[in-house]
Image (cartoon, rainbow, N blue to C red; front, side):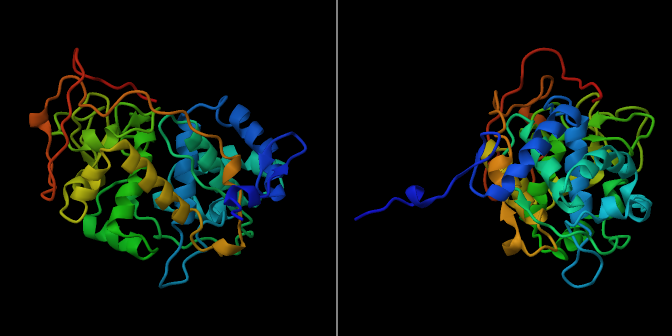
Length: 343
């Protein structure tokens, strides 16, 4: 007799009618409803969603495989915020922490769980994004992460590629995973590189999780937004768009250029980001002790549209450095040159 695996999967009906694989996940639905309405402005892929993802990274990266510098994805950036938000590389993080603290106080989730849950929910609001994993049960942090676990390249992106890759290697990430994590810049903006011009997005579609960030980072730069140049900034190909120096060099470095080009494919971008984020979200944790509550995370809306060059550009503007396989064929949008408003 053949018994299908699906028939053996236990499902639990929560008091509110939602169905999950583990009953412990039922308590997350009130949190989900609350933050979608009151943190993410009704489920938008906006500034708070971008900020939640940034906070999840800054918390988790406080970790090392070789030194005792922090507990990774443990919520220490919230619990010990007086210490960690004073680090230079965490400038601006205090506003994000203060925005999430009232929600953390309302529920029984640990700070580490809330930070990663909020990030996964925030990303789910962005069309084209993958449905990120979420695991429940992180214990409270015992100490703040040490300073300098986050490179200042997050604020003034001036570190060379070797330095950036070495820092990620120290937490167990290879070059391809570094490139995958940078998909977060598809739905992000810069506030600190040019303080006089906050909210400058990194691509022309900051409310959509798509490949435009990877495409546009490869285009020849023509101007600076605001009154640049500023430390850590490269010329952008689009008016109103910010290009980080670190992104510019990673896109063109021989160790990462082909991986970068691979992310011009939406499915490759989605799957690699999902895998890398699943790994990041449990840094420093005993993942086998955590409960998989990924079925609570909403399913993102599908992407509408295809990869393209922004209006006003052409294939001759592409600065591809991958020698292993040809650059995909892309056509430019019609009309006047693309420009991007602040977010």
